[in-house]
Image 1: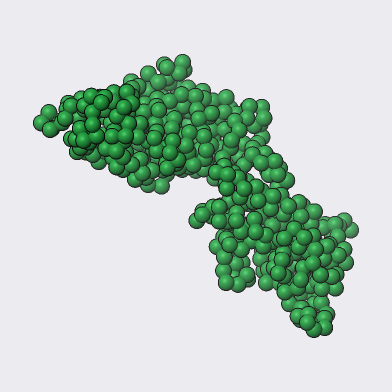
Image 2: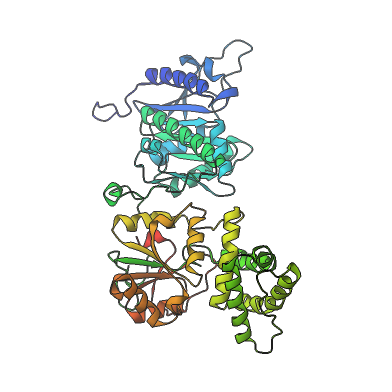
Amino acid sequence: MSNGTPRFGVDVGQAKTLVAELCRHFYDQGWVSGTGGGISIRADPDQIVMAPSGVQKERMQEDDMFVLAADGAVLETPTAKPYPQKPPKLSECSPLFMAAYELRGAGAVLHSHAPETVMATLLAGSASEFRCTQLEMIKGIKGHGFYDTLVVPIIENTARECQLTDRLRAAIEEYPSTYAVLVRRHGVYVWGDNWIQAKTHAECYHYLFQIATRMTSMKIDPAFPALVPPPEELEGHVEPPAKRAKTAGDGVNGNGHAASPKAKVVLLDIEGTTTPISFVAETLFPLALSRFGSFLGDRWGDAKVRAAAQALYEACKAANQEGAFVEAPPKDAGAAQVAAFAKALFPQVEEWTRENLKVPAWKTMQGLIWDECYAEGTLKAPVYDDVPLAMAAWIKARQRVCIYSSGTRQAQRLLFQHSSRGDLRPYISAYFDLTSGSKRSRESYAEIALSLGVDPQDVHFVTDVFEEAEAATAAGMTVTISVREGNKPLPADHGFSTSSSFTDIV
């Protein structure tokens, strides 16, 4: 209480009544069954009322409560009740509740063992975060809007509740915008500025965990921003940059070009930029090789496949005049003849793949193979979490998002259609591939700018490849080099602005 003004809105007696009522309410919701979970409320003048451990929550009474000082010291212990009631015991949640009171100035902290909280931690696999977006109840969490991505940290469980304290404190400090921390295979801790806000937060979080579980069972990604809202609706609701990487010149490229967010076009590379570099090398390339022979055999009746095979034959022959290549067989060729054709080409395409050579004919064939795998549902392209959020922000700023990659335009569209973040094609205005020229040639970038109807200086290119950055800069574009895990190290004196997340350049 400051100058006679209540800080938390309830005194100790009222807080005891509220804790008992909330215990019964949460029990009815299935959140605190089997004596699990816990509830605490901060009361004026700066004392904490806390439900005991090991008591049936639906039978909780006002006289069952502990009263603690602001530093966690016990001021009042409830009177023991006759057998078979257990002697009163301070909740094992106590040090975890105190973490939220200390680090966030919370007015109430709640702990739930609801099934949906456990499921939310399992949906994330081994990830350390639960995420969802564009769900109405996100608006019930302080500081969040419909278009924001709600992020809830997940910490690993321990044998005893009190052993979680350090992990919970670390999560609270690392995620300053969160009002909840999930514990894998255990439950959730939720808090608010007062008991009303904490209760509201708990109800909204539980709703979102439950909906996310149902969405996932329907193969709908709750973290994918399915709507592409008009810019005026995005105002103030796009997730702000979480951590901005500081670079030389603080947003200015070493070549003197400002990394301006006002560029008319944001041109993105894929491999090592929007998508982990390992996906291409460890998934896409081996998949195309392993499916090459069977794909030709199964799809030889398709004119598009035969045309691609003919172009591939000619490219192989041009690359290796001494190769024992078999000419593409006719449409009605038997399986053995098609298999012999594929076997003859395989060593050459394997060499191109191993050397990561951008041969257009092989790129086309790869795209056709990946198309089939995407359609079968056996292939999903991982995309960094920050990518759709940044794309939405660029749309808000009336900037076009375009792609320039060595993969064919069709392969690019397929990747973004079947991404781990859902169908991202609505965000993308245009695709460019090697038909626009080598990615290490200045002329290619000038041609792309011309195709887009803008000057090169109105294009902000993001890539992980130093030589591509040099070529785009020579054409007059602003450039940021993507620094993601697994990307090739840059020269020490590269002189470019760098980014480990698109939130750095929104």
